[in-house]
Length: 266
Image (cartoon, rainbow, N blue to C red; front, side, top):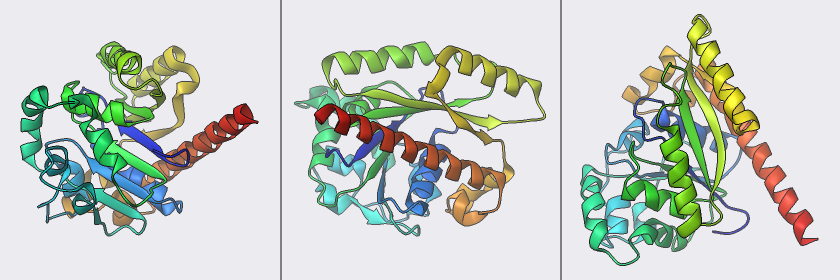
């Protein structure tokens, strides 16, 4: 990873929080902002690959970490200019067991990424909804983690466990891992509970919570069945606007981080 490259793991072991939707649409919105982006589908369900209309998956993230494919072979372009993807297949679920006996098992993804020829400004990793060896590989390969949180009663449930995993990875495998931020998803402005949960999360995590909130939006839900990110499916809908706003926040965050690093060097 170079200083000009940001590798972000999108993770939450709780399913149904908008993790894959956020991975697809944040990656698309960053590309729409003129950034070069690679999305790595690292969830055996393969929904990020399906949501971008990827049919051919002979070379994929599983064949890369199991050394059946070269990393560069596993990357393909998408219908979104500036966005490439490393798709996956259901066989990746076997990697949770197979990795146990592999040398440097926590570093397989990091080592694969280091061999990619093209320099991407952003690499987004869509993690599985668990805290197993695949997620540990993603956290070891990343310089930050972005956590989608659904605006529901049990939003904070399990977050303590995720933060402990981040701290463990930071202590033993990747000292540079940082919490990029938390993004509130499926926000329903007609529902008092959404506002209460949002206020609660902001009180707990302060400026780690993005200002942008992703609304509950039917167009966002429909887009994956068409094999398109919502920005291509309906650019004018509230979901598309929210993901563009989130991408702009991420870019601003990155500029600030680089400027702080340059100040430290100076």
